Each structure stands twice: as C-alpha cells, then as structure tokens.
Image (cartoon, rainbow, N blue to C red; front, side, top):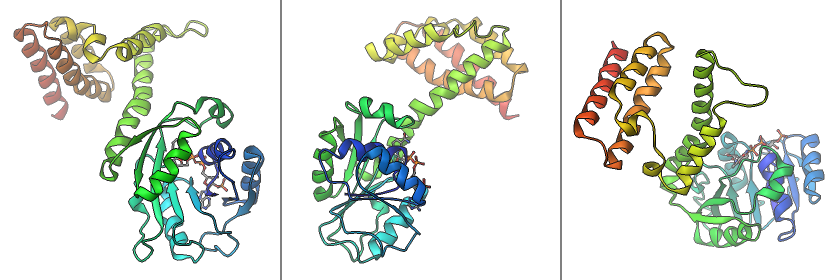
Length: 295
Ligand SMILES: NC(=O)c1ccc[n+]([C@@H]2O[C@H](COP(=O)([O-])OP(=O)(O)OC[C@H]3O[C@@H](n4cnc5c(N)ncnc54)[C@H](OP(=O)(O)O)[C@@H]3O)[C@@H](O)[C@H]2O)c1
C-alpha cells in the first residue's frame, strides 16, 4: 500500500495496518514530513511529491489518500490520469464529508474506489495507536474496494458502518454537531457562568460534573430519559426570565437559546408529562423572542 498525505491520520493508520499489509511509499509534500511519518510508522520509504509529478512513484495495489480534504480531488485526478495505476488497483480516502465519487473514474472503470471515515480524533497519533480499536468507521464505494478495505480495517479493530455515498454530507454534519458544536456549547456555558461571576476553582470546572452526568444519562438511555430542567418541568416563568436576561447579552446567545429551546421543547413534549398550556406558552415565548431578534 502507498500512502499520500501521511499526517496524523495517515501515519497512525499506516502504523496500525503495517502488520497486515506491506507499506511501500509514504508520500508527503516535504521530505522532512515524509521522513517523520516513516519514523513513526516504522515502515515504508519516504518521498516528497511535487503535485502532478508521479514519475518517482512505485505501483501499489492500494492507495490511501489522507491529505487534507481540499487536496483529495486534485491528487486523485492526477493519480487517475497518471499511468502509475493498474487495472484492479484501489484508491480510498478517509474524509468524513466527501464520498468516493470525488474520484472520477471515467475511462478508468477498472480502478476501484472507496472512502472510509473513522469516527476518531487522531490529534495524538501515539495515543490513537492504543485507542483506535473499537472505532466506528463509515464505509462506502465500489464492492471490490469496500470488500478489500473493510476487512483490512476490521483487522485493526474498526467497526464498519456501510453508508450511501449520497449521505456522506449529512453523516458528517452529525459528527460535527456531536463533536464541534458540543465544544462550542460547553464553551458558551462556561462563558455564561463566568458572566455570572463564577470561574474555575483551581483545576475544577464547576459545570463538569453536571455535564458528565448528563452525557452519561443520554447514552444510558435517550433524550427523553436524560432531559431535566425548566423545559422538562414546563417552568414558563423561568424560561421568560432567561429570555429577559438574554436581552442584554450578545445577540448570538439569545439565538442559540431560542433555536435549541425549540428542540428541547420537542423533547419535553415527547416525555408526555407536560400540560398543553405550558408547552404552548413556552413555544410562544421562544417565537416572540425570535421575532424580536429579526427586527
Ligand atoms: N484528524 C482527524 O482526527 C481525522 C479523523 C478522521 C478523518 N480524517 C481525515 O483524514 C484526512 C487527513 O487529515 P489529517 O488531520 O490527518 O491531516 P494532517 O495531519 O494535516 O496531514 C495531512 C498530510 O497531507 C500531506 N499533504 C497535504 N497536501 C499534500 C499534497 N498536495 N501532496 C501530498 N501530500 C500532501 C501533508 O504533508 P506535509 O506535512 O508535507 O505538508 C500532511 O502530511 C482528511 O481527509 C480528514 O478529513 C481526519
């Protein structure tokens, strides 16, 4: 297997896969970076690639492209237009948002293509070597490619989730909501707490226990069993008080509160405990605040 773009993801996957497949060339933009990757992988020979100049590449049955998402299309195109690929070879990438359709195999129909996206953060490659096993991976592409890549990833502990190529963007939206937006929400919670005059106590974050218990409750059960607080209780006046306080804060705080308020109210409604009057009163408050935001 050759790897183009052995950064955090590529280096980690090559090192994990190396007992199961022979790693040939490790191709980055710079010689220094390729050398660093080879040292980490403990396999393969380093190569610095000037985009489009594929004369120095050696053939390989499998090409893993783990460069940044924005470069996948260009590199895939250059690879497919080169004469380095042989019929039956496989190319895959690991992007969450892009599908295997990014590789245009028109005229090269015997090249197999796939994408496989691990729901894993490779921020600390050394750590990922021990934590990757058990990672869910969304996989799609040609039958020939997925039946080759899938078992290979299973050998390093991946749990495969087949996905349609047309659903990759929605799928990625889910992971961004779960991972990135959760961080934004946690950060906003801490900012509001600081605004209320409470800051970290030593290394302890006062909201940490509440957050961890809530996440735990969600995964032990579901949204209905985990939701508590003013929306679940139907406390109309408390929510009115929140909206009043938000009139003097940055507008985005109110936008977040009202948008997520509607989602939270839907969960409260599905719990089936609240009288309709409370549900309607809260929905009216949120709608009214949103109308005021627009004016
Ligand atoms: N990071 C994650 O946690 C994670 C998780 C799941 C999936 N992914 C996916 O994995 C892929 C890689 O992400 P990453 O975070 O691992 O990236 P990264 O650490 O920034 O590494 C990117 C690598 O690509 C190389 N590169 C960039 N442009 C190139 C080019 N034109 N030709 C050859 N090599 C090139 C870079 O080489 P130089 O060092 O020489 O510039 C670098 O080694 C992306 O598709 C991403 O969506 C990442």
